[in-house]
Length: 347
Image (tube, rainbow, N blue to C red; front, side, top):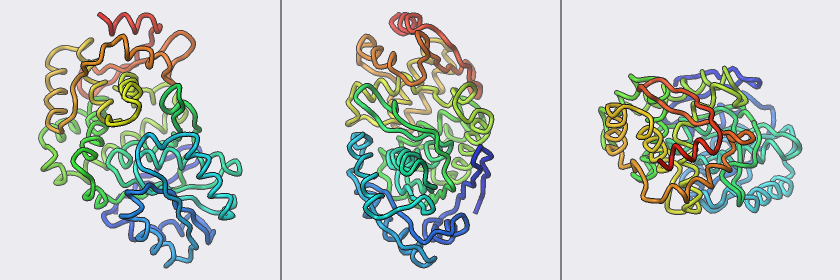
C-alpha cells in the first residue's frame, strides 16, 4: 500500500492499494469511533461493490445503510441531492457518524456536498471506483451539483476524512470510461510533469494497466501539492482547470448526456492549445489523446459554446481565467475579460 498525506485545513490520507476496497472497514475504523455508516452509490457501482464495502464495514463493527441513485451526470442535481439528505435523516445519521461515497466523480461530488450540508457537516470517506475519480475529483475537497445554469455551480469545499483508491476496481470499467479518466491524467502531465506525459504517451488503452499504479500515485501527488498551496482555488489551483472552461461548455451543450467530462476536457485542452501554442506541443497532445480514443476538437460552432463559458464558476465579474500550456509540463494562468476570451476563441 502507498499513502499520500494531504495537509489541508482538515488533513487526511489517500490510500492506494489493490484490493483496498475489501479492507475499507478496517481503514475507516482508524478514523472514526462511530458504529454507523451510510454508503451513497449509483446503480452500476452499487451492484458491483456495495456488498463488498458493506461486508468489510460489518466485520469492523459498522451498521450500514445504502442509498443508490441512477448513474450519470444527469443525476448530479438538486432532486438527487434532496433525496440523499432525506435518506440520511430517515436513517438517523448523526454528526458523529460517517458517510461513504462509493463510485465515480458524480457520486463523490454529490455525496461530498451532502456531507458538507447535512447537519452542517458530517465526516465522509471517498472510495473512488473510476480512474477520473481516483486521480482527480476524490482529492482536494471540491464538492458540487449541477443546476440549469451550468455545471458545478452549487457546492462547498469539504475535505474527505480519507480516500481509498483500489485500482482493481478499474478493471470493470468500459474502455469509454477508462478513456474518460485518461483525459485528466494527460492534463496532469501537461500542467506539471513532462515525464508523466511521456509515460502516458508511450502507452495506450491496452497497455496502460502496466503502469497504472505509478500513474495514479503521480497524479494524486501533483494534485496534493497544488491543493496544499491553494486549498480554496484562489490562485495556483486554477491550473487544474486546464481544458475545463471549454470542456464544461461542451458538456453543457450536450445536456450532460452522451458526452463525458473526460471528452470535454480532452477537446477543451486541444481547442485552447491550438489557439495559443506552437505546433509541436499541439501535435504531441493530439497524438496522445488519440491513443486513448479521446476527441481533439469539436464541430460545434464556437458561438454556441461561448454562452456556457460566460457562466463558468471561475468567472469573476466581467473576467475569467483560462489555462494554457505553451510547453508540456508547465501551466500558465491567463486572466482576460469575457469579451477578450470570446474574441480569441472566435478568431
